[in-house]
Structure formats: C-alpha cells, structure tokens
Length: 154
Length: 275
Image (cartoon, rainbow over all chains, first blue to last red; front, side, top):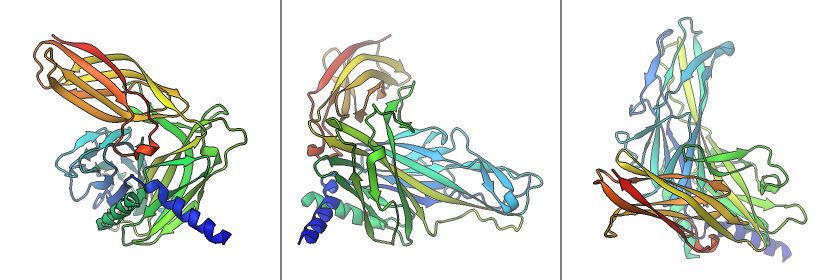
C-alpha cells in the first residue's frame, strides 16, 4: 500500500510542473552542407541558402525570452588526425521570427543572441559558414558537431 | 487538470515536427522544500530515438556592458551563493527517448542541513543528440568528404523555495537616447528580498497630451543587479518633449500565477527631448 502511495506521489509530481505552462522545443532541422570540397578552394555557405544552410527550429511559451549560443567547431577532424578549418563570420547566423529564410535578422554565431517567443511562439535559426580545405588536404571523411544552446529565462 | 491536459495536448501537437530534438515541459521548474522534488517531461516527436544527457550548473541572467541580457555561468559558486546546483540530482541522467514517446526526468533536492529560508537557483541542461542525425554535406568526391552533425542543448531554470520567500525590485537610473529610428531605454534594476524577481518590463512613450506613441513589453528576471537596454520603435519623431514611463510588474503570461511571487509594481518616468 505504501509502495502504491509512493508511486502515485511520484506520478503526480511528474506532471505537476506542467500546470499552466507550455513546452519548449529546439529542433535540428537541417545540417550545414558544404557540398563538394576541392583542396585549396574555400567553400562558403550563406545563411540564406535554403539548401545548404543549417537550420534549427525553436518554440516556446509566449512571452518567454531565451538566449541562443552556438558551440562551433573551428576545425573538422579527419583521417589520421588531419583537420579541415571551418570558420563562422559575424553575420553567419540569422533569426527569423516568421520561420522564413528570406526574412532574417543576422547575428554573430560567436556571440549570444537574445530571442523573445512572441506571437505564435516559434522561430528559426539559420547558419552559414566557410570551410577552407588546404591545397594539400588529406583525402577522407571529416566530421564535426554544431551545437545550439537555448537558455530559457525567466 | 485542465492545464495538464493542455500541456500534454501541446506536447502531442509538436509531434508534427519531423527532425532531431526533444520537446521539454515545463520551461522552468519550481521545487518546494516540502516535497523536495520536481519533474521535467521530455517528448520525442521524431522518427528516430534521441539520446539525452542531463546536468546542472549555477547561472543566472545578467546584463553585459551594452545592456544585453546574457547568462552568467558560475563554475565554482562560493558558499555564500544561492546555488542549488551541487545538491540537485536528476534521475536518470542519461536516457534514450524512443520515437513518439515521453520520458520523465525526476529532480530530487538534498539541501544541506540548516539551509536558510529563500530561493536557490540552478540551471538544468538537457542535451539531445539524435541517433540518426541528418548528417549532410557528404561530398560527392572521393577526395574530401565532410559531415556535420547537430546537437541541441536546452537550458532551463530550476528554483528551490524554502520557507518564506519574497521578492521585489528597486528601479533607478532610468535614461533614454534616440538611436536612429529607435528610443533606447536603460534602467538599473536590483532584486530585493530572498527570491528572484520574475516579471514584466513595460515602457510607454507619450506626447505632451498623453497620447501613446510607442510601447514595449518584455519579460524580465532580476537575480541580482542588472541594467537592461530596451528599444522602442519611434520612427521619425518630431522635435519636442515627450515622456517615457517605465514600470515593472510581476505579471507573466508564460508562468502559472501561483508560481510567480507577487510584488507591488514599480514605476518611474523621464522626459525625452528630441532636438
């Protein structure tokens, strides 16, 4: 009986915080794509490129603010420890409250960016960047991780 | 019960999203010292499992020199800080959320004996990594292939309240400047009491007849002292004298009223001169 009561309390507790509150979502929709890379030829992807730019969709309770930051790799790691430089400029990220790639406010992905979930409580972040393979870049697969951090305030 | 149903309904609505990440509710957790426990519900709206890792740190919103709101992360909070990060635990700390399923993370507080009344803060980090992420960018050449994966980290506030908690805010140094087609507004706000001030900032620009020309509302959380900067769109304002009224109140649309600590509104105003 005590076990049942404990289980009930745990279950009830689990749902209590939901009262009156709405969920928060951060969704990776599309990764940043550089296409074919040729040694010695930088590849630039614009944040307004619908096919190649990275995209994250955000959602949150109306009237909530959040801080967006990125953890970005400066290099991609490849075969036998080889690296491929990756850079992100001061306007390589963009935020669209309407989730329209053609209607963005640009920002520096290396700096925190404040968003407010207003209206429909959604928004999208777009990300561009530049990959710079060296003229003697070692052949093989290079990988890295782009992390988006959303800190919800109250 | 109705609110719970609404929240669950919203969670299910998010299932239409088909990508990587989890839906998290609530966006702030308030733990009462009598129960010492809380919970966060995760929902995976995707078709692939999501690996989730959970951790805590101590941090709070502050402002930088430009008045932008940023999160101050304190890696090693001292013994006088109101950090709850060291004595909050999450169960489980690592989990896999199957497609279209929910999982609950339970939070348990084990505060030190003799903890003084007040509110203690931590930030809960929920890192989500999909098992089969949309790794794109694999070049169609054998020479150099690139694959970038995405990871998302959602950080929410956790508030542990013990005994009598009360809050308030002191407002000073209200000032403005016309910057292009905007009116920049700064104010110094300092938290009072033993809990964070969670409320709404409201600014109104009026002309000499009292007519509203521009208005702004923004959520605000005051944990210590901060000087946020706001901007009101004013367009091409005719030269003259105007008045900027600024107030802070504890009303919030995103939080249940019982979670927000009440405090009387605080107001100030300044004259704005447009040359």
